[in-house]
Image (cartoon, rainbow over all chains, first blue to last red; front, side):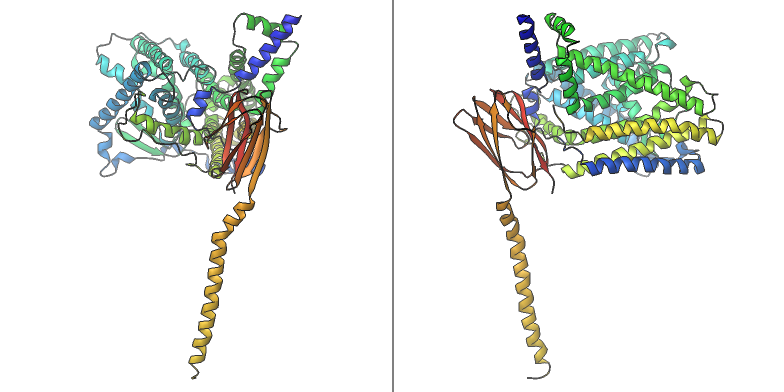
Length: 481
Length: 129
């Protein structure tokens, strides 16, 4: 009895301790967190989102949104810009990307082991993972050009690849789903992902998987189904008002890339919902409510024996709880989405199956996730991102000063707290309105009559308003880490 | 004096009066923030006991521009670090320490501790004007 109680006390302490950030990491970035959204902005944003949803419905009723994808223009046809799409320029950019990739690997293996003296962790987690997401969502599919795995494979094999195996249809996007789960776990739950050496090892491991997949199934097939970052950034890029391909750079209306002719297959639907959930999950982990849930679990009588047994077996309980949530939350979101799809299918006349409805409408949720991601990460990108400036002068932590910026001090005032609030709420409301618009245009295309299309959108509107409310709620919570 | 001189004299008096008003306003505008600043000093006394701050709430709030003074007392030696502003202080039992700074940047800043306490002991929120 006595032993049990002390062990549980130990667990409680461990629970409390493990909830705190790794000091080195937090110190590195001169941490400034966003202030919680004031109540008037939270309510105002919510009200605006709902009110504008009805305005959108009225507009689409009149206009049908037909031909929204045809409104586009190739920037490179402008005089003086054509060279940007030329092979020479593209190959120089690709070469630079590959050089950066090599630099990161070198820094990871041979550079300073301290995460904030080494260029690899800051570049990978701030500049690339957060920055490329921003770029993809706002400027388009730049990743298609920069993807080092794609470049290395293309240049490395130069066409001397044996004929690829046909890609089994049932496999769909599931490889990307599995790899994304692993990546999200690494990013959000493992405490080691900022260690330069481990990061380099992970990059190498992922490269092996990627190149093996490309060799077996063909480069482009693997990029579409299994190269998880191409799938993620490609999905975000659908939202962007610009899109590049084959020496052309199209400017188009925002979000119209999310309109689809064919329903997204089941594995794709699961991928999208998994991505969306992980974005929200990241924010939830920083709310006081999460701390309350964790405390409740730690003090729960019912779970005590199981938790103690696991702790005895050497399991890290915090990581376990977070992992459980990482898996359960998407499952819940998928279940909710299936129910909403059923409701949409029924309200829309019953001729289109639930599976097809899910496939047609899942992409319309993406703008809400992008808006939240932008709001949540704006100051992080602008403040933590400044660390790249001194690191460029001393990438390996060897006291170099290549560009004279080695002593640059991060300016935490670079983005004003009020500006962050206004950008956040504007982004969230805009994302919501675009989401509602896309869903309505899809409904008008998928369902036979306008009346059915309109009715079918009521469940969708409920889902979207709920999702937007969750985003706003998270932003109104004080950040606790 | 001609009729034209009267307006000149009047206008000179008006001019001087106007200049005095403008100078007064300018002086006020320059001095006021300083005067206001002297009155806008927020002082917090925080005690660390058993590894935690004894305050009821886990956040202290000030407004941008205010002078802030945090007086720390502790039952065991602890190293404190206010993030963002990057202010360090070491408190020991019987020897309290003060963090004094101007809250020039709005945001939410954790105050982390090493030693007797661990991790974030309290948050400082600086609200924009």
